[in-house]
Image (cartoon, rainbow, N blue to C red; front, side, top):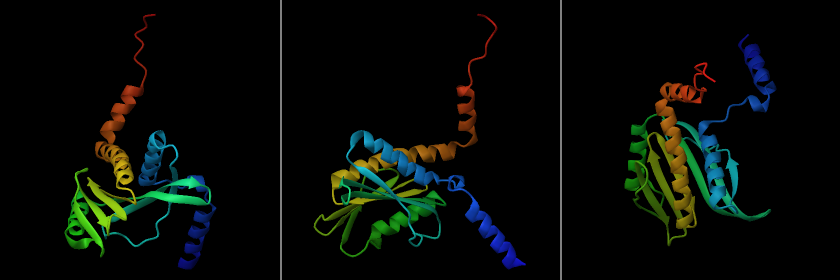
Length: 193
């Protein structure tokens, strides 16, 4: 009986149209960053991704990835790569970042404090061959990496704007929705013309 129910659930899920699948807020966030960047870096091409990597930590809830490239079709060169993690709590995200800053980086990387968001660090590989900015905003952890420090700093600032907006929207909840609904209604017509 269990096998039959599992098969029915599987078939039902497979038959749902792709448009019925909900996009995570983190994937939407990265797409908003891509739209923002198009205004200042029109030659950068965004490519979304799917991460099948193991979780960063037990408290990880969602991961979204994307990359920016430039060049011609078939000859794209990476500009930067972004990973956005939503963690179950700001405390868990902060603990992870603290461990990373104090000895958690891979061999060959140097890590130093960086002034961005709630807390952040800048990692440099070898002789400046690659840079990574990792920052925390509330319960979001974000990693932006690439070969140009200038490019990843630009991208990190754009990601932070969207993460802060997403965090505000999540923390505001029903109160913000009520305000939005009230402000979107047309003014009351008093009957005077």
